[in-house]
Length: 117
Image (cartoon, rainbow, N blue to C red; front, side, top):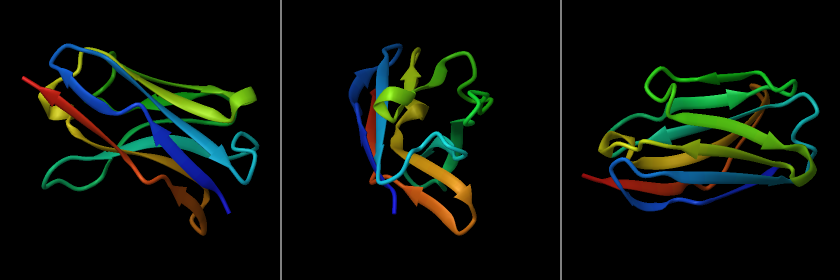
């Protein structure tokens, strides 16, 4: 079993920055797993934001490219999402995701990010 705990959400003005953290326990997160961030805005479906492979390759959604950056710290078993130039449309609950295969996938409880205009 994998436990994922997110932190770092909050209220910020448009143009501001936040950094989200996701710390894993129960298993080494960086063996072969794909770690990532998803978000779900009000009245919207959950959508992909970014992920990072065990080898450190990153992919970001077009909507956040150039503004958000995913990274990891192996020693802390933690991934991060640095969010800059935040927009009101970035308002959502952000979820950390651990994916090894379709039957071995885990989610954090989510952290709220609210961007005021």
